[in-house]
Each structure stands twice: as C-alpha cells, then as structure tokens.
Image 1 (cartoon, protein in one colour):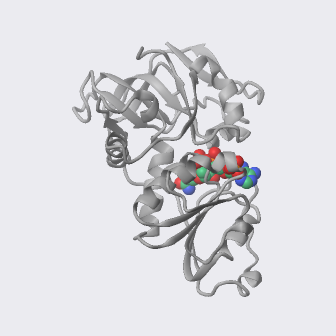
Image 2 (spheres, rainbow, N blue to C red):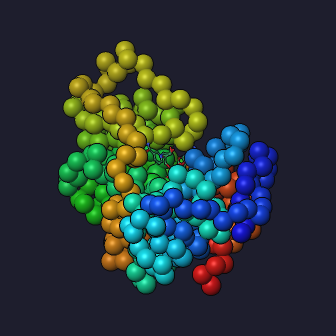
Amino acid sequence: MRRLIPTGDPARPVEPADAPQPVPESGEALVKVEAFSPNRGETFLLERPRPGFLPGKDVSGLVVRAAADGSGPGAGTRVVGHLPHSGWAEYAAVPTGALAPLPDSVGNVQAAALPLAGITALRLLRTTGALAGRRILLTGASGGVGHYFTELAAAAGAEVTAVTATPERGTRLTELGAAAVVHEVEQAEGPFDVVLESTGGSRLAAATAKARPGGLVVWFGQASRTPATLDFFELLSGPERVTIQHFHYAGEPYGADLATLVRLVSDGRLHPEIGRVADWAETANVLTDLRERRIRGNAVLTTGAGR
Ligand SMILES: NC(=O)c1ccc[n+]([C@@H]2O[C@H](COP(=O)([O-])OP(=O)(O)OC[C@H]3O[C@@H](n4cnc5c(N)ncnc54)[C@H](OP(=O)(O)O)[C@@H]3O)[C@@H](O)[C@H]2O)c1
C-alpha cells in the first residue's frame, strides 16, 4: 500500500512511499482510509520528525477487517476514527474504542474533520460547565477547535467573543453564532465568565485580564509557539480570585465523543468548517498552508478510495 512518510524538509514535509499494510492488534480494526485531516500541531511534529514517526491522527473510511477480539464495528461499516499516529495511508489499524460508525448522512470529508478538533471542543465545553447566559472569550478561534467550540457554546446559550487575525478568518464564526469577533485580545469587551486561551506569548496575560472576578481561565495551547507568560504581580492589578486551569483533551476513550459529534452533524446541529479539500497528492502543500494560517477551520485530504 501507499503511505505518507516524513522527509524532514520544511518545504515538502511528507512524501508518498510504498509500505506494508498495518497488522492490527486484537482490539484494532483495519480501516481503508478514504479521507484524513491534518491538525496544525502535527505540522510542527514534521519539522524534526523522530525516527520512524508516521503521522496521521484523524481518519474516515471503511472497516475492511473487524477487530479480532470481536469489539467495535464489523467489516463494511463506514467509520470515523482518532488514532495516535500512522493515519495518512491507504490503510490504518485503529483501536475500536476510538471509532464511531457513520450514517449515510455524514460524508467522509465531513467526518475526517471531526476527531481531534471536535473532541477537544466537546471536552472544553464540559470543562467550562453550564454555559447558558455566560460570556466567553476564545482566542485562536479560526482553527478547527474554535469553529466547533463556538457553534456548540452559542447553541448552549453562551455569548462568545472570538479572536481571529482578520475579519475574513472570523466570518464563519459569526455565522456559527459568535456574538462578537475581534482581532486582538485587547479589543474584546469584558468582563468574561470564562476565558479560553490557546495562542500563547503575552496573550494569556491579556486574556486573563478580561476575566471577571472569580472567573475561569482555561489555557489549552500555544499556537504562536511562544510560551505563555504571566507576571504574578500584574495579576494582582487584574480581576480577583481568577482560577487558571490547564486542559488536555486526552484521557477518556474517544468513541463516545466521536459518536456524539457524528450525531450532531447528522442532525444539522454541527457544521464542520473545512477550509480546504484536496487529493492526498497535495498533502505537502496543504500542510504548509495550514502551518502558515492560510486555512480556516480544518483541511481534509482524500485518497480517492471511496469514489
Ligand atoms: N490542550 C489540548 O488538549 C489541545 C487539543 C487540540 C488542540 N489544542 C490546541 O488548541 C489550539 C487550536 O487548535 P486548532 O488545531 O484548532 O488550531 P490551530 O490551527 O493550531 O490554531 C488556531 C488559531 O490560532 C491562531 N494563531 C496561530 N498562530 C498564531 C500566532 N502566532 N499569533 C496569534 N494567533 C495565532 C490562528 O488564528 P488566526 O490566524 O485567525 O490568528 C489559528 O487559526 C492550538 O493551540 C492547539 O495546539 C490543544
């Protein structure tokens, strides 16, 4: 079969290669991959790939061999899956606990865009607690996580202020329910009950200053690749009794959350924002555009297998 392997060359971070078909463990199904979605964080891992690294976390496709232990969907089931790596290939071995079946109403392209960004958004929503009537500030909102979070939080009754680089990158967020889109944290009109920060640098401090007294600040990434800095003494002149919490999406099995995301898409209550769809021969170019913030929401590559 064919798979994409890292080159270590930033101008062309992956290239196709012949590879053996993966041999699933007993709790893994063999999936014929029809579409996959790279996440921007994965583009960073490709800059200096560790030996043997095979990229690819988010896939959709067809189960061609059910798991040997009898768990999960049977052969012939269309699925979406989230795996630790190795998904940018014609076939992937996916743990059955990280798969969800797809109804006819959800296409492969939409499904591939769901896993990492969608699961993160769902789990962030649980971290924030009840949202009806609460004011939320969300930085780095033009990526996959930001679009899913904004639509789900707005539907739950929150008033979301999203931060994006440009109006163009914020357009869809307004359509998905954001109450306001601003282009610098400083422009956001606080105070906010909940602040979600994922861009790093000085923005964590700027966003924290927008929280209400007793508010919640959730730090979950540094898309700028500059470590977030906070001067404790500056905090003393800001809102009092703010809780700053770290968040990581991993831990619980992914299958149930994937099934929830699929159901929401099927019901027309969640709309994956897919800024680019291309054949997987274009993956290297798409990765560059994703890294350089030229793609809104998710990018999806198709293998042609499902056509
Ligand atoms: N903690 C977890 O478990 C977890 C899980 C998944 C993702 N994440 C993190 O969540 C964030 C969102 O992930 P994602 O995949 O949806 O999106 P992403 O593409 O990694 O980044 C989201 C947005 O951040 C903004 N951004 C990027 N570089 C920036 C810079 N130098 N300065 C200011 N803003 C910058 C960009 O928006 P604009 O161009 O519009 O400014 C970009 O669209 C990332 O930080 C990611 O690492 C965390």
